[in-house]
Length: 211
Length: 165
Image (cartoon, rainbow over all chains, first blue to last red; front, top):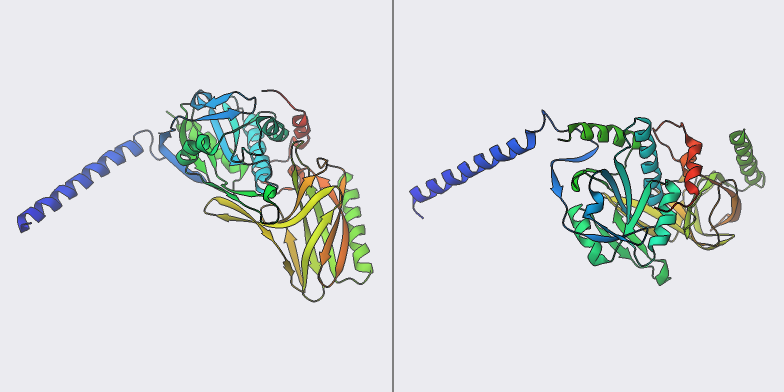
């Protein structure tokens, strides 16, 4: 490549970078002065979720359509989890009550997605999640059914075998709480350790900033 | 009033161990109430070691199929729970088992754990031998630290009845 060619190439790359920066900046800040500062990750441009189909605790299918029209706090876990999942569900219960007190719980849903479909039947899930709060819902699905949602919500899970007793395996799983907006898109991720009071404040800010 | 009674019970339990000259003392034991569908539960406590280093080798509990020690670690937002074969209990220290950290996992519960009842737990130490402790069952709401206002703490009980969606 000639020296002139190189210069032209660099100018082109520089120009492209500028254009990209301008476009991104425009998209990031067009809604508001500054995006809400939350204890987690806020996505100024909500991410659409790929089509998915899980099984709801009632036994019926649970799809993208079930996320429309309200905000959803989504947590991945499993009912055999003795420590962290009950901790998270207790926090979500506190969050729900906090939002209810603030009069901001009218358009919210709380979804526990089990990554352990082998042991978590819809019926077991229903008993499990409604113990923490009657408003909570559970859903699960096969690995194939879970994968699109897991990937889109930047989550992860993995079975950990117990060499002493195969039936007593555990699951590693992401302990974030995802916030899905009323258009069924990922809007924010609350990272652990979650504080219900802070999540409530953050949600109110996100709610207020939503176009 | 219940809190006072609970405290007295704790103090009594603690004193019972101290009186027999055992350098190990179990403080603030509690197990979390479980949902009706749960097959597993968790117990938490503090091990106060006034003597030389010891090791917790295992535990068993009445009405519970298996008892294991587990530790939870948070790794880039991913929760990983691992079995702990032996828990070191250094001398002159207090080892705290608490939510989100090390816990005693109660596996294959014969029946759900109900707040107000208790689980008889036996801890097996290498040097101190077997220590028995009555572990009161409490609601997580009442035990888990939170910055949330404590109001409506009792309304939670309404949620225990199963409800069809």
